[in-house]
Length: 310
Image 1 (tube, rainbow, N blue to C red):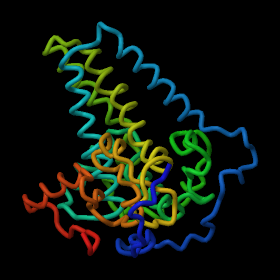
Image 2 (image 1 turned 90 degrees about the vertical axis):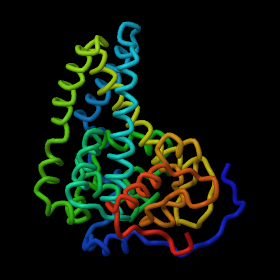
Image 3 (image 1 turned 45 degrees about the vertical axis):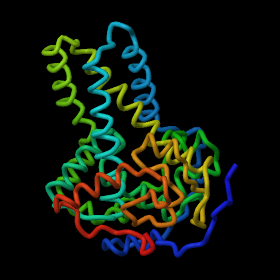
């Protein structure tokens, strides 16, 4: 049930304006290409399906008693913070997708690399698809349109051809110019190899067990980060409160915000997509915004964008 208490209209920071602000052309000649237009409904992205099945099966092994240890769980939590908070939420989302603040190029690349460790595509694809989502949120052209149901918006959309991929190059034009981002976009999966080697070595040194560290630090962590991230696409378009007329079904959801370092204040975000802060109302804890404030205090975050009222 969506509460209408406190609902108010607000000038929206339109996604198209945000793209123009970073020099991106949105002249999509064929912007609306519904999933249903593919000639064969049975088409599937079997590579993605196989990967997801495999990574979820490996989490079962991680849960076996012999692989439980304090170092393994610590590795999971530390890498969860690095990939979900620094990488996806702060890096891929607020920094690269919306340019809600700026940092030195070297630091921007570090955050982008942390995002690539999440195995949610490289920065070019992630940013392009996210900007496409904001442009067509909850319409037929939205690749994870919540009107198609929870399963579709949560993960089902990834298992079928994604027409929005055709627009990624145009929507991520600012990132395509960077050779490191082009490399990272093609090779993001390879980052798990040195990470796995480091985890295995650490497990041997701490007597936690090499494979225990690998299982908790890679498949267990990836599955956790995947589903927590996907909740922003699914749960926050189903349950929560509405503070602004954002033009779609986005809602503010406190428990999703707690899991995602502040991303659950999704209605606020869709109303003000360029804002570095998403927890706008009293009591809305936004840990990613606190990270940005820390960067500001160090003089590393500049040109921080916020709604005029906040």
